[in-house]
Length: 264
Picture: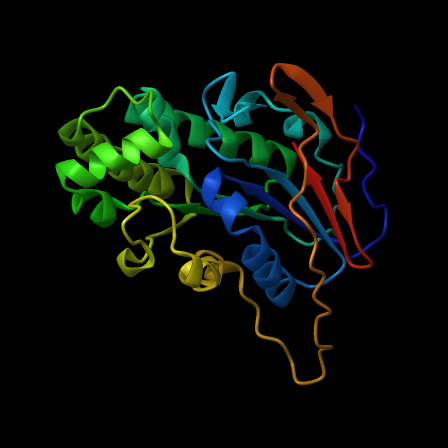
């Protein structure tokens, strides 16, 4: 399926890769993006509840989504003119794959592959990677771990000790990767998490995204127009499976006067 990108000059393009924190925080994320990045805005995103970077498919309840590395995003990023503003990229929720049994090294390699593909698309990408919530996971006791695993990831093969060790190892690998590849890396604020150690609390989502996107922030001049905020519903991905049946959605999934959203 071919998506129709805007041909207008001066379009600001953003790529957002992630999982449940993007799905749950879509509205505050969209608000922050529109405040910080000049319109018109094109958002290319691959996210979803339980979304995997490494796997072929991931499942949440009755819905399956393709893995981020194997989804349609990579063939649909638009050709970018030489004078186009540098695209902004957010890569988050990388710890999600640990609960599917992938090693920290596999997850870090998936993140590196995403970065390499994005730089092949546009070498000027401004990339932000978020670290896993090490402090939040480290504070979890056995009862809360069993409860979260039962409710969120009933097929998770990890013990509590393994989950904590894997999260710490992934964090160290991502820090090393960020230094080697010269990308921004952002540490999550421990106070943003509550009983659920991996999902940002509802009342902290906007501030969490503001922290994540701080490296992109540009000071607005006094004569800059106040951004018009479009509140769009959560986008539907180009391809998903619901109760085993394939569902296709034409892209862009969401449109307004100043925002296009392409979901994969």
